[in-house]
Image (cartoon, rainbow, N blue to C red):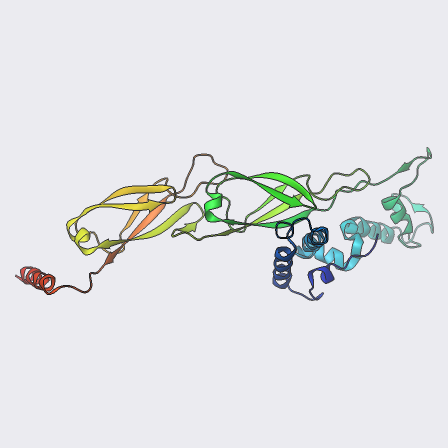
Length: 301
């Protein structure tokens, strides 16, 4: 198995921080994404390498295994177990196999033989160890409006198109796992999995906090003083609200069930909170000023 320098692929130093690795991955993934490079086999190959490198280096445990074992990082646990067994058998029989483990002499050759080609059993057959395929990871950039409803998307993973369902209510930074669409397994082992991290941008007038939405509505002075009916926007339409006379600035109105969909809970929604902000009139005419003056005199009296 040829050695693959994941640091070189992501164009980062071996001492790069997690933030630097993430930044480098995002930059290169955008550059070589298949959607931006249709029918470009070289870009497709680079995109595959970038995702593979990110899968290893963006996870601290995987990165440590890679730094210690190189291309064999996925089998690090087996190597460590072998080392421990060999140390345990250090005072036993030299060469061959000790009881319940490897002997204390030689290198890992016996272990590698059983791992990557098997060794002969008493019946003469060869048994190969099965290993799960490599997990892949990718980012999917969406808008807040995209995740208000459950919908389907087609992703290109290693040159193959897969159709996935994105449930309504997905949050920014949330990660989901799709089993069996990662790398091929070794020696008949199962395929790896795909991990998708969602980046959800908000270009709406609403602020989202989990399942609840927040928005501000400006009220004119006359509606605040006298009361009235107003129309406000929700995420999926408009509703009419009644404003009570004498409503104060900063009053919060709760619209139950008008918030964001609750993840994987069909027909369940959070709430929408509307904050009233009083809009003070400006550029008053002389007549308006006179009328307000009369009102002030009435208040004083």
